[in-house]
Length: 205
Image 1: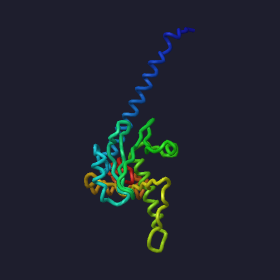
Image 2: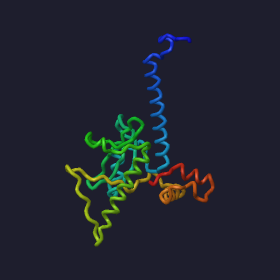
Image 3: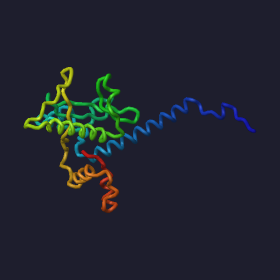
């Protein structure tokens, strides 16, 4: 039996650390690159729009209108700009350990959901907002009941209607409608090329 000395068999700890760090960086870069690819297909990602420019776009829009843009703060990648009952507001998206989530106060952070992609994050809050709006408007008897006032003088953030940077194609709008209608695209009697197009953006917003 041959024995190797620990010097020759063990990779130095600093080297192992740097290899792990390199893998994490590669993973982060590929995850962020995939997020940007997905965002580029949405039509409501505005890229390097400033906060003031976003405010001007949203200022006359109804509550719940939103867009997504690059964050102007170095520690964040993206920001959601949305119209609330108190006017336009901005909410940063945090990226940490391979996941995206909304930035918020420290006490709320553990409760916030985390997502593999930015579009999935936006989709979640859009569906949540639309469900909330439907339930509020189904009270019957004419006017919908008012939403309960959020605590501490804050405003409720709704995200229901995206602002498109350019008019989306009819194909893209159809793709969203089909994905809303079924989660079984592969079972549809369609050519494989069309199925690939539908699954290339399998979101509802």
